[in-house]
Length: 491
Image (cartoon, rainbow, N blue to C red; front, side, top):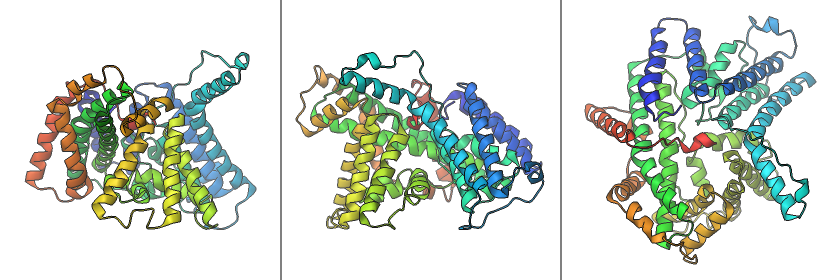
């Protein structure tokens, strides 16, 4: 199910909110039950079988957390016993270590199988074919379907058991509360990736206020407008230019910048909608974007882009690898490893690995070179422009269907490519007033407009009227657009 659809807007959301607020005076646990039912219905709408997968991993993680916190198998006693929090830095028993290993292994194996089986098989067969060992290829009709959002909810589950193991969070003895954390539909399939320790108290107790609900509507409406009015038209420009293969140089740059806008407004729009839905339900989520195209270096970009993922990679991968505590060389290696894994997290393709390697190399160079490599000697607007240009070039590998296509597109951007037959014909579409106007508006909003997070802090009658007008325009436009899911649904 997609937020930007009639089914969600006019059927699922009113039913979910109506059921939730009907229990306004009921105990918190009952509202959590409604959220679990809503979350499983939302997740299993396209493929009900995946609900059982999410239930199984949720149960394993909950059970593992109880073993970690209580260090015993007599779990029936923990059902009504006080929830325990371990002392950070203290020794852990073999049983506790086994429990955390089990939890992480199950989540990584589930994620790895569903996300990388097809990729691994294709890479294996391609390698054998290149070596002339075609008879050893494994040809099978079996193909794994990727469950929506599996990358997001597995990372959140890992953060839970690791936080319990580190002593940074209490284990939840009530499975309802933990299931609510995993299956909450606002952030279930595309984030933000929320730390359990951040949401734990809100799951156990939260307030429902008119101010939260009003700001939630504003957040959701503006995110919806980003998706429909900006991301989708810019996506059409990007689709046509990348489909051309080798467009003319100006068209190639136009297309990749349009894709940069598409992925930003698509994903930040989803994050805004998720934050808004959370506020309607009484939750306060973390900020996930902080004007990333205002960044003055790649390091600064990753402080602003997909903040919840970069924070997760830092806390659960970079720091455990040693961070910057073991010397310069090891720091650079850790940065590369983290970004390569971050690239693979986005998808099973060598293009994503290259995209991660580009960012990892640049992060390591900036760390090694200090101000010179972060363009500190340039005027501010040029630092922003150079950083955006580098990010846009890296987006080519993120968007192109394969490595050959990405290289051909980069050659076109550099002016060395041979335009494909009929490459100039796409101008009849991508330069139409509607698409060009959407591109220019996206440009202005990216660098001139305030962020949703700041603009909605104080809602006035004028702001509310403008938001509602834009929302209904977006709803009308949505009726004329084909099915267009969020980009990060694929991750």
